Amino acid sequence: MLRLLFRSKPRIPEAKSDITWIEKDLVDAADKGEGVVKEINITHHVKEGSEKADPSQFELLKVLGQGSFGKVFLVRKITPPDSNHLYAMKVLKKATLKVRDRVRTKIERDILADVNHPFVVKLHYAFQTEGKLYLILDFLRGGDLFTRLSKEVMFTEEDVKFYLAELALGLDHLHSLGIIYRDLKPENILLDEEGHIKLTDFGLSKEAIDHEKKAYSFCGTVEYMAPEVVNRQGHSHSADWWSYGVLMFEMLTGSLPFQGEGRKRLLNFLRRAKLGMPQFLSAEAQSLLRALFKRNPANRLGSGPDGAEEIKRHPFYSTIDWNKLYRREIKPPFKPAVGQPDDTFYFDTEFTSRTPKDSPGV
Ligand code: FS9
Image (cartoon, rainbow, N blue to C red; front, side, top):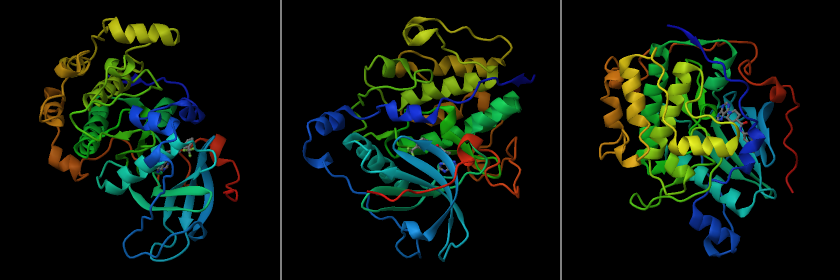
């Protein structure tokens, strides 16, 4: 059965700057101007066999995204050993970054430098000038999954299974590093040129400093958030498996499971209402969704000691060969058109039509 995904344009990226996803201790310390978080420096990160990087080694080609505190560019490396290679360059203005945003960027940089996984975006260089912070990341030319889907594509349960299975591996890897993604939503899932997914945008995620200690934090996008996050009861990696359920539901049905008119009604619904399960979904899909939408995180699939293994063993995934999947040997349901004269075919022209300019930092 084919269904259309009819979500309108993704939320405006600008809204991201309003979201305060920060570990409470850090925020408190930052607000008080205390010690460690006062000055955050991005230490240099260099690709193996390369010289120290700096902005002059990258030619700006296009704007991919823009917000109040920075921009994301498509760039071409000018200097060897990777001349002509395309990257995404995230540029953040230090002056506009509050201490808490600098904490976030530092966290993003640290997380990315540690990560090496087929389904997580890779950081190739990190450097700074007096006024700016630079992160040089993989350029994912397929754009984000949901922009694409909302435009033209229909989803089968098989398609959804593929994306969710790759996502489970990426998410599990982040959890194994002590990272709770927490801000998992469709816009954070990009497609590479073969059609495999990559998780991105860690700016709003955090490192769980202590696995036992739950994270307390403020919230942003509500539709994908676990009830314990909304209720600020503290959360662990199982909050991400709830969001994973929301993504699954949205991909299978074309609408969000928990929606209400206005934030207040949505919050109430998320906290209390019973989920209506569409009967056209397969028994396996329904069963997995029920197991993910447990309000008590301790009962949620994925919360046990072997984490993602519980999810990987679920009958919904009985046809998935997880080793083949990890090796990227399973053919994606959709392959972005490559060799396009325009590398930014899958990106919003609202941004790509702008003249790329990295203004001189203060
Ligand atoms: N390859 C292609 N596209 C990537 N994107 C992910 C980030 C998207 C974006 O617009 N982010 C954004 C960033 C800011 C900030 F201020 F932080 F700079 C503000 C508003 C939006 C653009 C598309 C991508 N990411 C890594 N590799 C990529």
